[in-house]
Image (cartoon, rainbow over all chains, first blue to last red):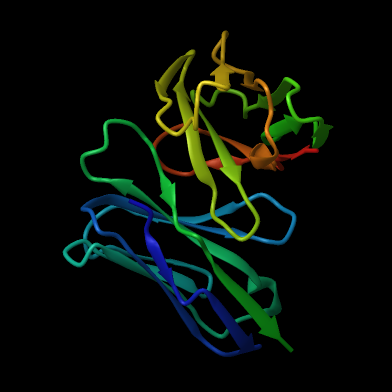
Length: 112
Length: 112
């Protein structure tokens, strides 16, 4: 049931773009994106609720393809502050409770 | 305002001992979640409370783990007869809805 994230790790130079993918083998109700810096708690970035929904947050945006059961996170013109591990969390469509299952993360390193 | 707090921040215990981990959620948040995070992995769902009741405890690994939330606010995760494999960071999160979860800083548990 755990969503699969790809790539596992990315190294960028400041200003470059990145895409992080999250896919599920089961139908999804929602996809949640979090960022966690080393030694800190995960911080909420955004949630996508509907198929085809896209959201943006500064230069970070995401899309949700309900049919393909996948979501992508787009980081544009990356800044040093974007470094960290990005987790997607999925809430299954037929889940009886708010049980979010997190992927194993994508580690993003930004170099000056 | 005050975020989610967890105590202790670090706990070292001997194999076989009993431990209690405490979580103070954001005031007014009815939903409370416990997760366990091992190095290089995403948060692993343990249990979810809606008010005082455990709405979903399917993530608790075995009957050595138990959690309570008697007054619908503070929650305590209890682990009996600790094993070395229980070593991890235990994260608590609270929420007003199925949407954004606010995570606490975690308790790092080390079983020697």
